[in-house]
Length: 330
Image 1: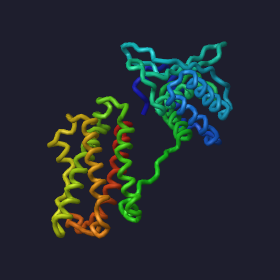
Image 2 (image 1 turned 120 degrees about the vertical axis):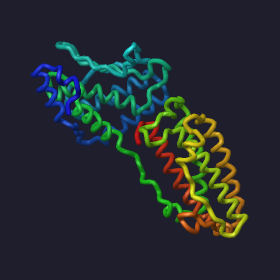
Image 3 (image 1 turned 60 degrees about the vertical axis):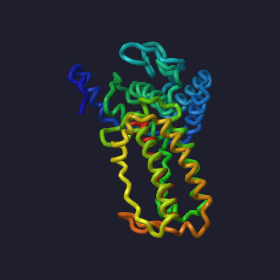
């Protein structure tokens, strides 16, 4: 369905709009040849060097125009975005008769002057390249923001940054690993968490991707409280023979403990402390203790060994959920 401004366009413009809307991808013959240029841009942004970012941006855009067989475009890398009441400017494409086309990109946010996240910067770059593609490859007399335009932008993005998702290991797959490997996985979780939320604002970690799914803050609070539950189960199993283990009620915790009002960094600090205590406890257990079990309300008999495999899977699952929440994805 066309965007609302379609109705305000002249008939000739509507024809251009519909043509643009009907083209949903731009294919690269060998996107893998551009992957080193993408990696170079990511590294330059990480170093926060404007000149290095400008050079890397020029290289990637020239690689794209060469790969698509279209004329080159001048690139200008700038520092902080200009800001006005309508918001901050991310990128700008300009084309005028008799003048070389130009793309301007800003590497820092308008208000806080922070370096833009790599994926956001790359999306902006591809957005502006998309306008150049409209004029020079698709030969459109105008470049409208149509649904097709955004799909073409996404098609380029996913060719340049293929999904790096490795399928998460199942509980059963973790159970097949030696104890030391599973404990090493548990020991990495705190570092994975802090890397994900370190530079995030409270607004970012508090925002839910939708009405149903948790925010990043709520995920951290859940991991904090789940760690307490796991430790309680370990100590109960060690103190009693086949004790009853109540089922967890995560959604109830979130509501009753008011996760949305909590402090994400304080919750993380508590989680890290509890995880250290859990690992120290598990490492102190004799080998035969790992076979001791409790009786779960819905899963039946569960050994300490089973619980550790569940913890590793649980960490992976919620780290992925946290990262998706920060990206605005359910």
